Structures are given as C-alpha cells and as structure tokens.
Length: 279
Image 1 (cartoon, rainbow, N blue to C red):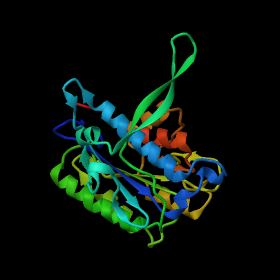
Image 2 (image 1 turned 90 degrees about the horizontal axis):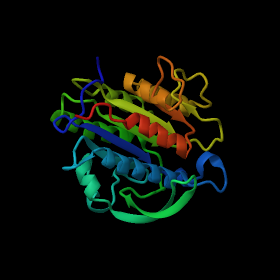
Image 3 (image 1 turned 90 degrees about the vertical axis):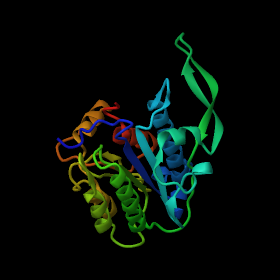
Image 4 (image 1 turned 30 degrees about the vertical axis):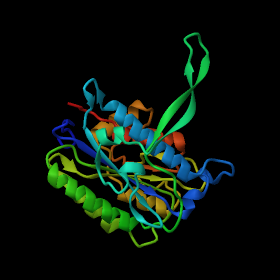
C-alpha cells in the first residue's frame, strides 16, 4: 500500500508550506472587524508547527532529522521565507531549524496548577517566519517553484514517504490557472506514492468552515471549488488522524479546508503533518 513507508533518519519525510503573502492577507479572519490579521495568524501557526516538529523529533541524543521542512512565501516576491540565518534556504533538516530560530519572543501562556486552577507563566517562543502582506497572488509561480524544490529533494530521497505540500491562501491566483502546475506537482512521486498537495482557503467571507469535503458541491464559490480540485485525497493515515480530531470524513475526502479559523488551521496542519512511523 502507498503512504506506509517508515519515516526515519535514513529516509526522512519533507514538508513544504506555501504561504500567501499578498496584500489581502492584511485583512482580518472571516472578514470580521477587530479579528486578528490573516498574515499574523498564519505566521503564528507556521511557527507553532515548526516548534511542534522540533519537539516531536527531539531525543536524548539531540534532534533527529526525521523531517526536512521549508516555507515558500508568495506575494510581491516568490521564494524561501525563513528569517534569520535560514533565510534563502529551501528544505532544511529539522535539527538545523531547531537550532536556528531567527529570534525568541516572550509570551504568556496558562497552565494547570494541579489544584483545579490556572496560572500564567512567561515562555520564550521561537520565531522562524514573520508575517507579510503585500502584492498579488502568484499561485502558479509558487507551485512551479515548489515542483522544482520537491523534485530535487526526491532525487536525493526516492524511496521514503512522499513529500507533503500545504498551500495556504486567501485569494484567487493572479497569474493564471494553477491547475496544470498543481497537477504536475502531484504527479511527482517517491517509491511510496505521489506528492500530497493540501490546500487551506482563508476566505474573507464569514461562511461556515468546511473541512475535508468529498465533493465540491457544497463549496460557496468558484475559488474554493478550484482549490478543492487541486487537493490530494486524504491518505488512510490522515483519515485516522482526522477522525481522532472529531471530523466525520468519508471516502474520497480531500485535504482541503474552507474558511479555516486559527483553531481549524492548527488542527488541519497537525493532521496533515502528523508522523505515523518514526523509526
């Protein structure tokens, strides 16, 4: 069966995030005035995902390179979007990411005090990716860039779990129809299966979120329907992870979320990037 390869240091997996940085990402989530800007929310979720992957790969002997991870931004410019010493890098081993945050930000979080209450404590949160919102939405170009990056990685890692690409966007492509580029990206494959392309649509329309649909029929606009068609079907492992998070997913469900809020976005990325077999 495809998508069953063990993820190990000898056969790592790759995760590539494509983050829309167009001008409309300066708008609030769901078009609700006073809500957090989409660019800020996505940056926060991206940094949290990177931190979680570092923690998952940490062992007594250090951070094991089970994953190579990259972030491509697309807006006024298209390209690698890490900050700090990783700037300009494509797919980077997770150990290097863990040791190279651009900066540490002090935040306050709540934790249980053991007596039924909550206490606030200050924590240092690593930042690798900064929010940005400027320019058009060159989705075709970023998908072609992703194909080059993932294709090169597959030539070096041909037998492991297939690369996972997650596209996070709030707007319609401004450089044409992304279908050919998305199809070419999905056709790339390792010995374990084709590249997985997942899509998150951050709509400014305050419509009800839709997660992991198996048909485009209930989606509210043509752009959401397009992103659904670009998305890969969920793997058996993703089906299990989605059900564990309380989603009712049917056969044919795709890796697509419409109108994701921050909570939905975190859960979506967790499902899409959850390691199944870390050897």
